[in-house]
Amino acid sequence: MWMLVVTTFAQAQEADLHQADSLFLSGRQAEAEVIYEKHLSQVINTTTVPIPIYYKLAYINEKQNDFARTLYYLSMIYNKQPRQNILNKIKEVAANNNLSGYEVDDFSFVFLFFRKYSLYFDLFLLIVAIYAFWVLNQKRARGESIRSRHKFVVIAYLIALLMLLNLPDSYQIAIINKGQTYLRDAPSSAAPVKWSIARGNKVTVIGESDEWLRIWWEKQPLYVRKLDVWRVR
Image (cartoon, rainbow, N blue to C red; front, side):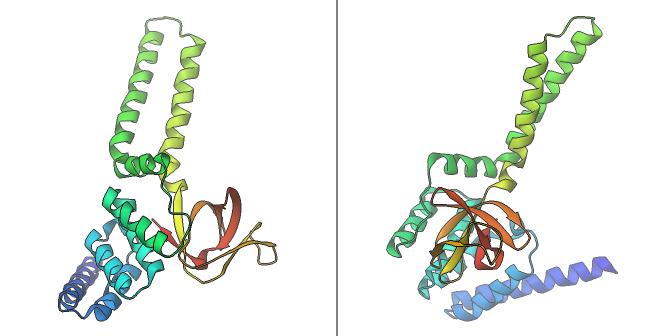
């Protein structure tokens, strides 16, 4: 029964996307946008969303002069496919609209590269860890002493590996989706407002608490409501 329901739902989604693609190609892009947005609202895991949908939505919103949504969809593309041409487009749109937060340093590019190929990195690091444990067990089986510094190195490696495996989930970016959004110094509506920033600016997410996100802005940790941003996942 459930298999039939899932199959029917998948077929309906596929039909909707085919209709949206036809509308997009025929120039009826506003109608196509509604269907694409409906599809995205039904998706739980954004990794299953075909990249061309983000390209089309970025194109549609740029034509509509909605630069905030344009930057959001371009950022979604870059988050999945960190390419220089996408980065150049993001910088161009942000610069033309005097927006901040879109400067990409070497760390950001390396991080996004790691996220893209994280599976291969994880497998390699796990193999190294297993090999290290095997060597230590072989020494113990032969009755050889294991130096304290070797134990320390293995433990430090495992801690670093655990942190690295959790890094992609702890580092996110978000784009302000409302005009004059308040950034506060605590996760509360009663907390003092430290900044007021406009729609389209990008912030770095470093944590969350209930309906609040902890972000990094102007070299300091602040808080913004989750509803006031689009998170790039």
